[in-house]
Image 1 (cartoon, rainbow, N blue to C red):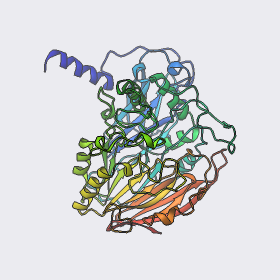
Image 2 (spheres, rainbow, N blue to C red):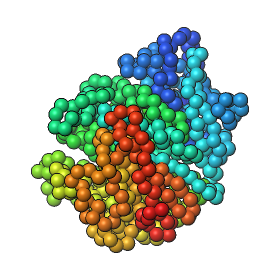
Image 3 (cartoon, rainbow, N blue to C red):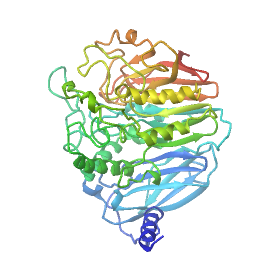
Image 4 (cartoon, rainbow, N blue to C red):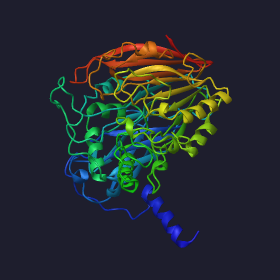
Length: 520
């Protein structure tokens, strides 16, 4: 290795390990630094990631922090009173990363609950709890994983997160994306009928483009007490969809036709802010070519989770969703890519029959779905896998060729609860299934909602491969055992104020020997 590359590598290590000269920092931060809470993520058998971000004044430029590197202490204990501290260390909160802290903890026991906190400038953070993953190859009796996402700050309160944080024995929460929304203040506030929009809370500022913009928007969301409670309750398995960057972006293109070299600047700012604000590992650190979000987590022999990226490597949608006349000509379509060739091969190589279950944790609906005739964008959602049918066919073929019957797909994006099958043959909705799909509704996007939205009364009959349709906000909870997969579908009665009550919509079951959805 030449001297230039050696220095470059050493500098990279110093960013993460604090190998640079120890900063001297002895003054007050000017306010409580842990206003954005704490979080954990991506458990392994011997540890997990711990996250916080120092922000005494979250919505100010620089979040009220001095432009200096600040050492932050972290502690992991076997009890919530920290009488038995088993690991501790120091991480550097650097201004280059918005004073975010990512501590990768190792050397712990598998399948055990721990408690953690941060300390800086005489202040202690809130306490979070997290469970390490089971040992590789271990027999596991049961796992409980929540599914949530699509949390538009202006559309409603995050009450569902409060209920999710109270669910017992959570191993993790899969966040399928749309953690923030990029629009200007007031854009997503609910309308009173066809009248003016009424904002009970609204975004700060205009539409976001710069790194400072994205940091501020993430901070505004992180200040929500119900979201903080969910983060403190369990490890997040964090992915993204479109609104972390821009609505319906695909690869190097946005929906407005911005030149790709200009959109790349916005996309990189958004990806850096995503990394700064998510409890993810240094493997997800943004690089010049993008950010490798897709990764794989194993829970003993019971479950393999494939966290997928359906945005960064996809080809452009073949039609503009709100302007069908902008469809690309047939000669320009060619084979579509939803995952990109490299990620697609990675996924196929990782699909295994040695696990009780394979979970494809991703963003947009995989199964075909026929929408009402009244839908302005058409009866098919071309931003979903239904706009990339050859990509879907290649994945289905890989599942069928491997004779896997234990594949479950977890999805969000459409702000409704659905459950159904991904057909083994394209267009054969009532034929054999390749996989089972559970689509979780939004935390707040779409407003209060209803059990069945107006104009959707015939939709279930037109989609015989599905077993669920509900337009309430909420989340889903997977209880996974060797011989069964149980999905509890949970909603809140309203998100327009904080008094929404928890409702159990249904409990559905899937068996490992045969894809499909059954009433419990």
